[in-house]
Image (cartoon, rainbow over all chains, first blue to last red; front, side, top):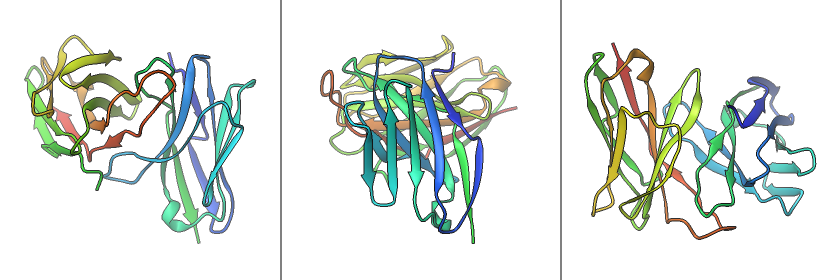
Length: 113
Length: 117
């Protein structure tokens, strides 16, 4: 059972544009929502994370928007650059004192000049 | 470089065989997590150890087992291998569980690519 649904599967954005990746979850016990960035041949690396007590978190060009009632959250990459080309995973973790992550299926982002 | 090391980088073996994947966490991290990444299943959590003890279990098959040693390195043992076990296996580490409502970052290693022929 997939508990975190991610879309789109792939995304092509022009340099300087805004990249938007969406995720939806089902489990209301989820309490921590990180986004991971993965380059080819590397392991995932934490990009930005949010808790459901805030609706938005911004770090540089990266913003997470969170809608608790809709059980949806999204990653926005402003002024997208070729170096942002990677696979992005949303994830969620329950508030059980452990850190088991459930990942979305990933979005392959390509930024074209 | 995340500070998490995994060996070997690549592993090619045959169906029915047994392999061991090794992970060394970042210095000071007490928790180790194992994940499987495949094309059809995505990134799946397998198991977590904290300071030598199993702490959480995910979609880990009975043919798979793991342990964390006193020096905190961890090994993932995969036995009776099947073609479908071909995947990237990632180890991640973190300082450790901070209790309900608190989270800390998981740092992922570079992965071991397992190919079962």
